[in-house]
Image (tube, rainbow, N blue to C red; front, side):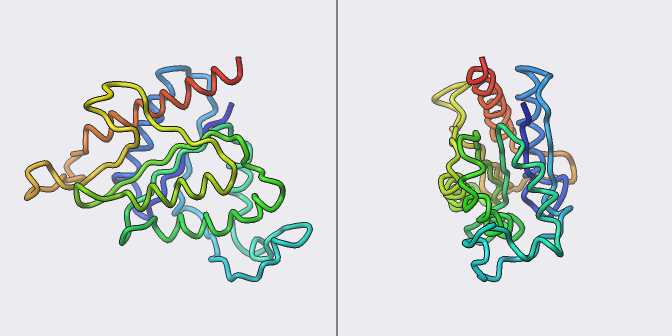
Length: 209
């Protein structure tokens, strides 16, 4: 079983990467036999959709795929039993890199829902403490449109931990911020992400038994 985790930030080794790494540790804590595939979205050249609607007509392919790297990502994603995407909050929405991926995923739906019944889990990073909801909404909409099964964290404390990992750079006293350069991270979001990874792994094992 392959689990694909996508770091949706153009900046490597930052908050989104931290969430994904914590989720990977959660997956491994359940079973080391999963085929874990980590993708840095910034490593791929993907051309923005131009609305030509060619993907609506058989064979439902995108002509832009001839000159970019969407097929490389497609080969990795479409083999997955579960997909997790961590995206940063850029002005209330996902990063442009993830938005382009979402737009260019339209052919996967038009080819009779190639991602149907794949488990999906959203994660987000944001600057201020109260933020990231728009990112989560965008990712959930993507999964719903593709026919995927959306899951959240239900492990750990139901009082102290949330269902969706949203890491913030803003500390709880509001006037201080996490210094990623010094190795600081939002520990609560990391814990929720770890438990989300466990949840996804447990579900896959349950479904396949």
